[in-house]
Length: 92
Image 1 (spheres, one colour):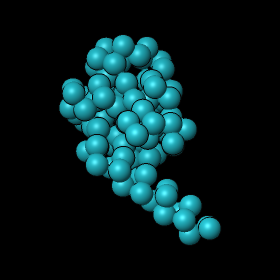
Image 2 (cartoon, rainbow, N blue to C red):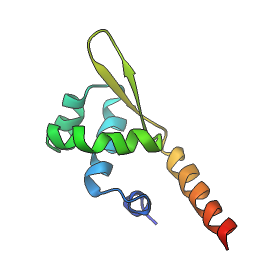
Image 3 (cartoon, rainbow, N blue to C red):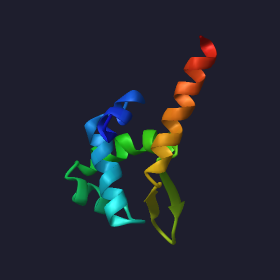
């Protein structure tokens, strides 16, 4: 299972992955920088990033006049997948 498969497990798209990877490379940064690095239009980044924040894959903080975004450690994806599988197993 590759990272895109994990993203798809949570209903995310390839663009979500591009945003996450760009944020990982760039570090704590703005939407504009994430859009530039990911080659995903800025308006699309604004549209998709809330799902990544909700899952805890990306964290948001406020600086003086900007919101800054920081990608979580890739291990968080493993943790999220394990939690999802655990919930499924508890239903069985």
